Length: 140
Length: 119
Image 1 (spheres, rainbow over the protein chains, first blue to last red):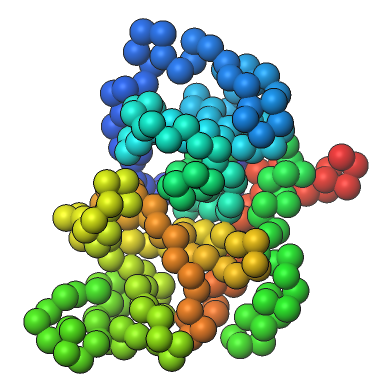
Image 2 (spheres, chains in turn green, orange; image 1 turned 180 degrees about the horizontal axis):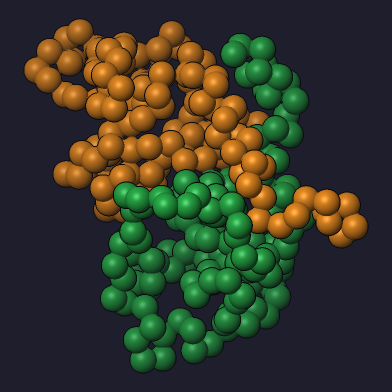
């Protein structure tokens, strides 16, 4: 679904950092992967994003990149769990993953076929504990 | 957090973003690493290699993660090198910014919320 809420005439928008490691030869788009969380076979191409790195069903990812997204340079290979939803200034949702093995964090844009219920559950997580949320509201 | 010579003696730091001067240690004895007013931090630890980082960029808060225990963690992203860190929320942090970050994704959902009921 095209986004219609993007602020118009937004200047000073920060560009993504340059990544020369992607799309070279038989890069990451050549083959799909099997989710380490729910064993779903995930096809490589996703609607709305060129950098799918998580399962559209359970949002689980795998720790393969070290410092730059796409470098495939780490030996960890741990399972990465979605821990939070972050919002870009233009309203795009990003999933924050944390590696269960080494604790490393990474972000990725959501894809068009990501499970809407899993996304919503993740976004509502901070408000799930009503004690914590209402205490925060009362302290305002 | 600017590290001047008297930082260790007086245990205070000045926020690099809003300029607030605040104590380094909070009541429970934990060390504060972000400004309680604007929640910004400074990139001093390298989490990929370990050890201290030479970046020293400004880190802005981007999301709130919830631990299994129910505690909130604040996720920072370095504006200079894009590294991410997570830190526990302190008791005297700015609750308005915390709440704003918690509900921010719901203000701009990527799919129409009306259809969620039929899923």
